[in-house]
Structure formats: structure tokens, C-alpha cells
Length: 393
Ligand SMILES: Cc1cc2nc3c(=O)[nH]c(=O)nc-3n(C[C@H](O)[C@H](O)[C@H](O)COP(=O)(O)OP(=O)(O)OC[C@H]3O[C@@H](n4cnc5c(N)ncnc54)[C@H](O)[C@@H]3O)c2cc1C
Image (spheres, rainbow, N blue to C red):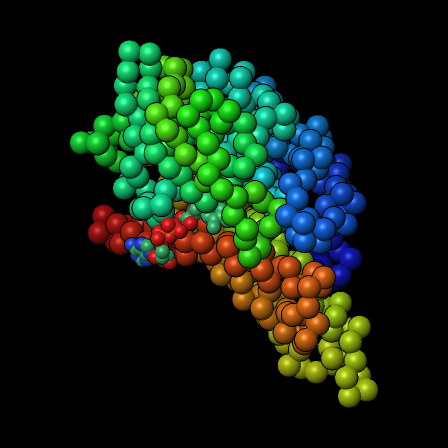
């Protein structure tokens, strides 16, 4: 399949999703997401109606088994869905990625009661969740978090602050990383809790206004001696780092897919513009400087897509190098995406700098992909550690 404008379909293959389901995703992107992307960016509106539709047609919880309310697909299917949604608008894909991580955690480690209370409504978009790890003093170094959960006669008492949390301004519940044993720290002293955001002691701190992906609601959460019952603990005490490792590779794959979708949209914009815009009496595409730039984006995009597919297949196969491959996929696709949107914008000349052009939004939406879900530097750290460990073995 080509990347020609109008060929609004992903080249990523799928395993569990059939042709009809793939067509449904493409149609949803074309008819429901793309027409409102500019409006969502300008108003920073939370598109609750789109998420409700996604919950109904089954676009949340792609890898969550169908008997748990998910799609029952593979990591490859998830990559396909993320890339396709992001081609429409990255903030929509972002919500899908968030639900995937929360859904995977709840499915893997939740009790039947927790799954009934949180997982089912999360997948149907009746409840919104947040994944709260980052703190003012702890971003890349999650082992240094200070949010503290202390055992009490009733259960737990939670105190601390989380920042830059996706969905914090709108979430019904948050999955929160907290220290339960300061002496053990990240070696068995950090646990995960499910916290209802409307309960006493929890407050939404502020609502961030961002450079891009502006319809994604991001803000802070403050826990002021929140009383939690014993069943707020997700899984076993002290196991949080192991749990995160289980889902973070998939999270990174998701952001890799989201980055591919932005690159594909940028390439389509640039191809169309290069044919529509004439200077010196001919379409600007007739200049090799322009057509070669398009050729470079298309080639790098195909290469990154192939790497992402390999990473997804490694997750599905339970391969030892899946984590490293997902970091490679995220690093490559996100760094490409930032360069691709820049190169595509250049094809637009001054128009590319003007609000209302899709490429101007894509350029802004791309930038965060190198930062969230682990910065590029953190991906290089994971890759180099795996490489050197392998060489020493
Ligand atoms: C829009 C948005 C949405 C987000 N959503 C969520 C969310 O839903 N939940 C959540 O918990 N968090 C979320 N985050 C937080 C995000 O994951 C962090 O911003 C990210 O992990 C980086 O942490 P930091 O900002 O504290 O940067 P820092 O960790 O302070 O890093 C600053 C710089 O130093 C570099 N650096 C740090 N340590 C090293 C090292 N050892 N070697 C080399 N370089 C290093 C980093 O790569 C970076 O370039 C979100 C952030 C944003 C902006």
C-alpha cells in the first residue's frame, strides 16, 4: 500500500483484527476524528463523545482478553490501532494508549472485585483512568518517588503529589505509584494503588496548557492523607517495579505507533502541498530538493514501521529482547516523527507556520513523543544496557 495522499490506511499488518475491523478503524479515523482535529487542538476540548464511541465499537483494551471486556488482540494489533488513530489525531491515540496500560495492569494484577469495579467501565469509557507515576522531583528516575503509602489499622494512608498526569483533570480513578517501604525503595518497597479521585483528601492540582496534543488533559494530583481501604492495593505489596516492566514495553510500543501515525499524516500533507503549490511556473514537487525530502521521509517511515512491527512481534512471542526492541522502536519512531514534521512543514514555506494548517499542528503534536513514556535518553540507556549485558554474557 502506498503513502499517497488519500491512501488513509495503515501499512501495519494485524493478527486478530480482520479486514472488516481494519476498515472500521480507518473509517472511524476519516469520518469521526480527522474532521474535528483542528477544533480539538484550538479549544483543548476533551472529546468525551469520541471516547464513548470508541468504548462502544471496541477500540479500547486491544490486548486485553475478550472475556475481560477487551478486544483480545495482539501487540501488533495494538500498534496498528495506535498508528491509525494517531493519523487522525494524536490526542485520541493517547487516550487509547492510556487505557491499554491501565487495562493491562488491572487485567494482570486486579482482583475480580477490582476488575469489575474499574476494568469493565474503563474499557467501555464509562470511567476515565489516570496513570500517576511522575512527581515534581522524580521523572526519569522513578525509583526516587516520595509519595508515601503508610499502613494503618483501616488499610493505607496516602500522601504526596503527582504532576504531568494524563487525564488528571477528568479522571474518575488513578493508578498511583507510592513508596510502602522506604528502606527497600525500588527493590521491593514501591507499590501500586487504585485511588478514586473524588474521595476526601484527593485534589486535582492544576490543568496544564501544552504545546501540542492539546486535547489530552494533563494536570496534577495531590494526595493529602487519603484514607485507602486494604483493597486499594493493586497486586502484591512491593511489586510495582516488576508490574511496570510488564506493561511499559507495550506503552513504548504504543507511543512508537502514535509517532508513526503523525509521520504518515505529515508526509501526506507534504506530498499534497508539493503537487498543489507552484512556484517558478511549476509544482514545487518538480524540484529535486522537495521530492528527495519526501522520498527520505517515506523511506525512514517504512524503516521505522518495520522496526515497530518487529518489536510488536517480539512482545507477542514473549521474546527476551522485546523490551530492548520496544525502546528501539520508540526511539526511532519518535525521533523520526519530530524530524519528519519539520521537513514536511518546510515544504509548506510560510503557510506551514500559520495556525489552521494541519502540518502546523502536527509539528507541535510531534515534540512530546521524544519525552513522555521515557525520554530518548532513557530509551538509549535501556538499549545500551541490554547491548552491553549481552556482550558480557
Ligand atoms: C504531556 C505529558 C503527558 C505526560 N503523561 C504522564 C502520565 O500520564 N503519567 C505520568 O506518570 N507521567 C506523565 N508524564 C511525565 C513524563 O513521563 C516525564 O515528563 C518524562 O518521563 C521525563 O521526566 P521529567 O520531565 O521529570 O524529566 P527529567 O527526568 O528531569 O529529565 C530531564 C532531562 O534529563 C535527561 N536525563 C535524566 N536522567 C538522565 C540520565 N541518567 N542520563 C541521560 N539523560 C538523563 C532526560 O532524558 C531529559 O532530557 C507526562 C509528561 C507530559 C509532558
